[in-house]
Length: 128
Image 1 (cartoon, one colour):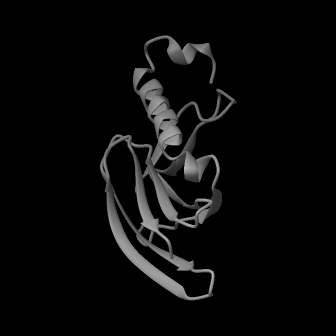
Image 2: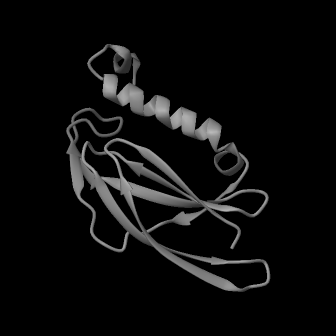
């Protein structure tokens, strides 16, 4: 990214980055002070999107999944899944989270989240 991002023609990207900053500030107990555990894999195929300018090299293009998710643990042991939908379309994200509490007990949760276009979503699971 360079200063051209703020030229006006990329307003939707700037709004998305602002939302990223707000989410990071609101969920600092996970994203700043917590621990990234693992990617959350979708159980069903996700749509993809392509971008002509992808990364630092401007003469490239790429295709990536429309959404992704990560599992985080806060210092107090709570878990949360952070979702990002990069596309302009609604995305269904079915997933399973396996967690272990300090005693080694395992718990599994399977859910489906509907991610609105170009949104971030946080699902706090609590303690395993």
